[in-house]
Amino acid sequence: MDLTNEEPAVFILYAKWLQSDYLSIPYEPSHLSTDEILEECRLLCSAYIFAETYQCTDFQDAVMDALQNRGRVIAGYFLPDLNLIWKIFENTSKSSPLRRLVADLYVWSYGDDWRSDLMYEHAHVDFYYHIALALRRRLNAPLMKPPFAAESVCTYHFHPLVGELCYKEKMVTT
Image 1 (spheres, rainbow, N blue to C red):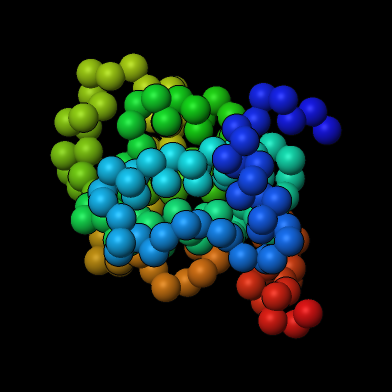
Image 2 (cartoon, rainbow, N blue to C red):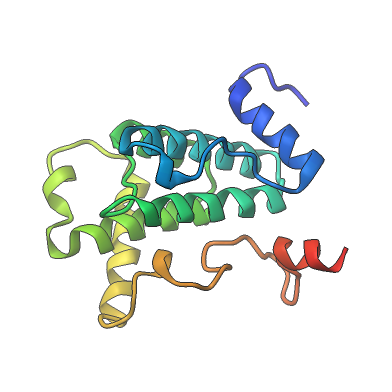
């Protein structure tokens, strides 16, 4: 496994998680500034890409939970900038839950005005495809809470097999 192109902070986060089954993020989000939370979310997105690349699905789901938790703390939720959108969409699979989360964040955070920031920007073409899917999900459930705000822990988890235990359930049973 060649890790020369991986960010050291991401690998350290992964190694600590392997040792403890706990995602070692330094601070509770309520103690961080918005800029610090956004930087942490960028690290978590990189960690998610790492997990998806190396098929570490339990780590992938733990990172997703942390991203959703951080997003709930920021008013208006965490919205990746154009550079991070490109990074996410260039380095994840077409069916990636992270892609779905990012599109849902934009659609549900901006509502009918989501295009205002990205209308004239050159975002990744797959981003616009996922925006269209997110808009369809939102139109089909207009009164529903945003999916990333739901209490369901598995909304954006990767569970490839029917009946497969969530990583949280695995921790309880071991």
